[in-house]
Each structure stands twice: as C-alpha cells, then as structure tokens.
Image (tube, rainbow, N blue to C red; front, side, top):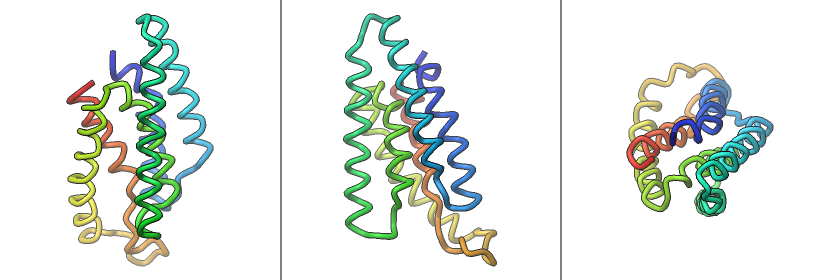
Amino acid sequence: MGYLVALPSLLCGLAISVEDIRCRRVPRLWVAVGCLLQLVALIVAALLGNDLFLVLQAALFAVLCAAVQCGLALVRPGALGFGDVTVTLLMGLAVGTAGLWGVVVWWLAMGVLGLVWMLLWRRFDWQGDTPYAGKVPFAPVIVVAATVALGVCG
C-alpha cells in the first residue's frame, strides 16, 4: 500500500526528472500539483487507516527535509537550486510516510546516488554543445533515492 499512497509524488517526480534532464528546469506548477495530489492521497489513506497522524508526520518530515535542502543550497550557491528544494518537498511528502528511518535511508541514498550520478553525468554528458553542458540535474537523484527509501522502509 505504501507505493499506492506515494504514487502521486512518484509520478510527478518522474515527469519533473525528465524535464530537469532535458533542460535543467523544474516546473513549479508540476511540483504544486504533485504536492496537492500527494496530500489528498495521504488524507484518504489516513482516513481509511484511521491514522491522521500519518498526514502530520509526512508534512513535517517534508518541510524539515526541504528546509535542510534549502540550507545546503544557501551554503554553496549554484550547487543546488530552488527546483531541487521544491522536489525535495514533493518527495518528502511520500517518504515521510515511512517515518524517521525512511527519511534517513532517503538522505543516505541521495548522498551515495548523487555522487555516482555526478561522476557518471560529467563523464557521459551528451549535451556538450548546449547551454546545459556541465550542469548536473539533481532531481532524478532525489526521486530515485525516494523510490529506494520507500522500497526499503515503506
């Protein structure tokens, strides 16, 4: 049932990842719609399971993770953008349902997958003749790490 509840975030995250790879842009409207749909899915799941704390838990973990990601983006400007912060908020709503261990696994997976992704992207970047050359899209890493965390802990 964890994947069904997280489906809005995962589907929107997949679309956002494709757009981020294609042109290094994270559409804010897609993030907003994804967050809204994810909250509706959380409320329905919480009402069916008679556990409204699930909505609060997911929302608090999502805001906390987005705040940490925003802090990281501010520490080193240019490394992460506001799009990465908003994608973290979106995926945090899904991963937050898995609790603290889900969030810890998600951040560890983001770190490991992010390092591997950056090395591979810089090595095999096929967009060398575009304005996006050398810029690594990070939204796919956030989404894949969230999927891993939900698979392990969800």
